[in-house]
Image (cartoon, rainbow, N blue to C red; front, side, top):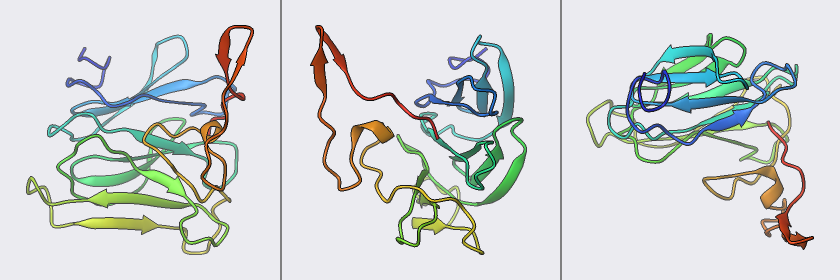
Length: 187
């Protein structure tokens, strides 16, 4: 076992906690040097898939239900490819070449063109020679059938509960000596 369970080494990226399989329980996804893995709530391995992230092994993912069917998809980009996995079993639904000498990054999901539908936003670079792609890439459904989402993604540790649609921070309130916010919502 590597530093990230069965992610095969490295320090691992930030965990993504979401209901990957629509069972009403949160699972945990994490990327390491050569695997993206998802663990069940009890810590058992749900699925793992081969990736390549030897440059930083600190990348993250986003989980989103693009078609609104109640089952999440996982969006992840390593040094070579951008992939969309089926959340239940890791089956690759989409992939395209997307080079990166990775740092602390992950793919975002937002309505970047204000059309009322989600888009995938990914960055690429050719710093380590993994491929020729450079820049910011936006991917959307050709028929604009992806569900609606917010137009804002304000920080690396984005949570829907920590920012309003207009970009203002949500106030945190102190209740009986504990710091509390509204209940977190998974994508």
